[in-house]
Image 1: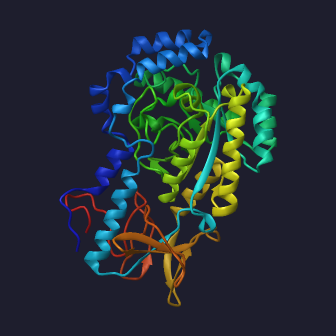
Image 2: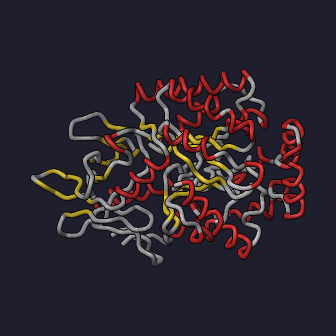
Image 3: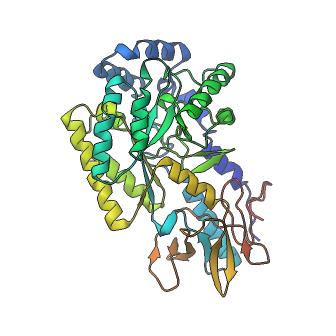
Length: 424
């Protein structure tokens, strides 16, 4: 029996739900504009040149290199904690290995998801170029449109995007930076956002400028959200979910943004290489996580920016060919993660198998400790993988591993409890 002096469920929830961010707002006020300044900025934003916006944002976020938490450029605190819990359980129970339903279909080592936020009329006009470029490399994506005011896109544009196999999502309501200003206003706006979602046939949502309040997501009628950064040092709202895996916020699945946005890379850091993107991808793949990009057609105007984006797609294509990563639209990731939450492992003829509806693409891997690290193997006598996030289901005495709890985490014969003992 493994007993802990803290509740790991609460710790992980606090990280994913950014409960520590109030401390950041208190000690890093320059990174969080007050309501008056934010309203003024978004009022004049449509007429501000990018150079002016870039200068203002650099002043506002000038303290970002001093931030120690979440860890830049990718924070895997949740995965590291879960890994430690699994290793503690293995040692306490003296088990040699634990089975788990692998995170991605067909044993893919990671998942990559490309999303495009469209924020200006120029961005709407460049959607066709962006789709052409993506399809040259066999990459589909989702386009998020802001439904009100100057950002609204013609219906014919959205229909063309869907006809070409891409996805449509709702991006805020009017991108004025005040969606989460107060509950009453948010509730009214959520009704309109939900109506636009039904009109667009959209299953996903992203707020403008990554403003968010995860406690209010229950008012949104979407299957998934894409508004929470892994590390938010360069966003107007500081924080970060500290995980590279999807997670549930009530009924909504959060697909966290795990790499730097193109605007931040090009205009804030003045970097037109893909070196930082490559480093972030490498760190996420070490944890078998979700590699989630946001790029904007609005910032693909210059040849320099377009060349950098093509280099990125070339790199992604190599990852797909050499490492078999799964490149998917957000709706596909949402479907997979929801299905996976309903499957279980059953011992059959001496082997663990995945049971449940539409589980043909699911694979079993085995976690064990090797040289002080958690490693995986796909089947017996095959090559081991390095450590990462673990999601092993709760097994009773029957030998069946059942449906996970809200964390999607458990151990055979164990479950993460809600009391101070943590595991038991």
